Length: 131
Image (cartoon, rainbow, N blue to C red):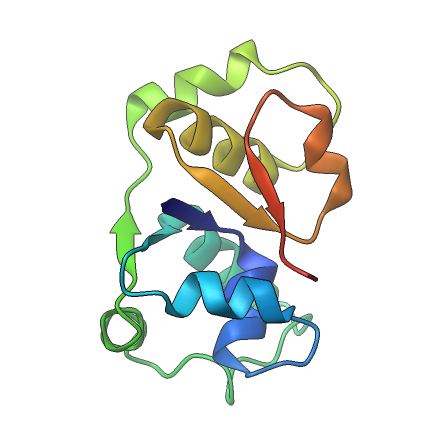
């Protein structure tokens, strides 16, 4: 299975949070699955950290690329085609990070692992990360 983990799932995984469900942990850990992390998630984490809304000291080290590689995660860049695909999304959400993740998941045929139930309003495969 090809999974795109959203920002919250990435932070939960990195912090070994109990909020991340057992099934989600199994899916992320399964060697047969490819786990993708969008550049948008790293961007969102960076913004939240810089304004004091997220403490990343215990979550992701300064070498984020190394952390992602250590976990076997694959990096998904934001491409022009992803950005253009956002315009085709219904306006259920106004969060630009959610929108780009949805567009990327749809465009790259990935299943979005998220705890955000509102994302199910979009035509995108999701798995509840809290389970």
